[in-house]
Image 1: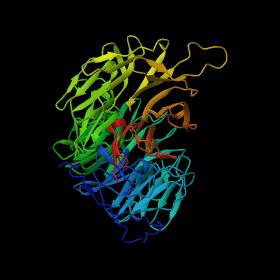
Image 2: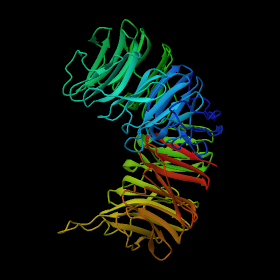
Image 3: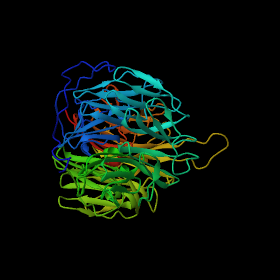
Length: 636
C-alpha cells in the first residue's frame, strides 16, 4: 500500500472539547477540514495558508522523530512545529500551535502522545501533549531545548533538556526535579516500568544511566571504553531483560544489549555509525545506520538497504518507528519517508529530490521546472512527472512562448528546446557556461553566461544561436548573470570585479547593466555597487534589477534604489513579475512582493535550501521552486 496515494483531501481534527488535562493548560483549536493537493506549506500546519506542497508530497519539512502506537496510528514531528499523523491510509498534517522545532515524540497510547523541542528562550522549552482530540502546550520550566522525552505511562513521563539541567518527571499531576549524575547530555530513554528506566547520551565520562525508582545512577558497566565520549544515540527495549542501545565512536558502530544482568556487546554487519533502534518483539528489531539499515529476526542480522532513497534517511537526525513485524517507518530530512511492509520498501512518497533552479509555464496547467543533474519536471495540471532532458548537466533557466515552444539552458553551454515531444539539444557556439535565458512573446530569445570570449551573449534568430558580443569590449572581467527581453527591449545585468586590489580598502564590485539597441550593447550607468544577479521588466520604461544592495528600478532615464537589503538579508536571486503592480523578489527563504506602492515580505522556514525561482500564472496562482526538490503552489 502506497501511503502517498490520494492526498487530495486531508482532514485535520477539530478541538471539540477544549478542556485540558491536568498540568496541560490551554487548548489549540484545529482549523476546519481543508482540501489540498499537498499538506500546508506554513510552519505549524495552518490550513488557511494558500501555499501547498506540490513536491515532495505529502510535505517537505524535515522530520526528526517518529512514534507508532499501531500501523494505523503513527506520529512524526519535525522542524517549525511540524506534526504529521498516519491513520493507516494517508498522512495528514495536524496543527501544533507552534512554529518551534520539535525534536522528539513519544506516547503511552493513542490518547496520550507527547512532542517536545526547542523553546522560545531560557526556561521555556516547547512541550505539547495530544489527548486524542488536539495538541495543547504543557507548562514546563527547565532548560530551553528538550532532547528526550519518554516514560512508561501517562503518569510516568521523563523529560531531559539542555545539559546542567536536572531530569524532570511528570507523575500525572505535577512536575518534579530529579538530579542526575554528571553534566550529561541525555538524548533518548526507554523504560519497562516506573522503577526501571534507562537513559543514554554522552559527556566526559558516562554513556548510560538507570533509574531504579529512587535515583539515577551511572554505575552500570559498559562493554567498551567510554572516554573521551560515548556517543549512544538510540535505545529501545522489549522488557526489563531485553534492552538495546546503539551508537558509534570514531565511525565504529556500537550495538549493546541488556539481558537483565549486564550489557553485552553485539556483533552486527554494520559498517558505519548507528543512530536509532526500535522494534516490535524479540524477532523484530530495526537499527538505522548512516550507511545501512539492519534487521534482527531473533537469530540473525540482515542488511536491508532502502532502495532508491537518499542519504537523508540515514543521518543522525533521522528516525524510525515500528508498529509490527510487517510495518516500519523511516523518516528524515526534507520530509523523506520510507516504509517496510514485511516484503519490500516503498518510498512514501516517491519524489524528486534534486535541487530545482528555475520554473516557467504557459498556463497553471502547463508548468516546467529544471535543476541539478539535468532534471526536467512537467506539471500537467494534476501531477508532476520527470521528463528526460538528455543531459546530466545542471539546468539553470527555463522559459518559453507556448506549451510547444520551451527552452532550457545550463552548465557547459547546454541549450535544450521542447517542441511538444522531447527535449532536443541546440548548440550554442562559443558558450562554455550559461547563467540565464529569456525571451519575449514575439519569439526573440537570449542567453547569457561565459564563453571562449568571456563574457558571452547570444540571440536566437529563428534557426540558430548567434553570438551578440558587440559592445562588450572592455568588459572582459564581467560576469553576466541574467537577461530579460520584452516590450521591444533587452537588458543584461551582472557584475564587474575590481582589476586589482589597491592599498587600504579594496574597490567595490561594480554593477553592470547593458541595453541592446538592435545592433550592439550599450552600458547604462548606475551608482549602485555590489553587482546585479537578476533582472525583470514590466515595460521598456520600468525594469527591475537585484543584487547585493537590494532591488533597483529603471524608470526610463536612470536607476534608483527601490528596496535596500538589510544586514543579514539573503540576496535576491531571481525577479519575476506580471506587471508593474505584481513584482516578486526571491532569495533565501524570503519572498518580497511589490504591489506598485510598497513591498511586503513573507519568510518561511522551509529547510530545502534557498528559494531559487518563482513563476506567476496570475496574481494568485504562483509556483515556487528551490533546494531538495521543493515545489510549492500558491492558489486562493
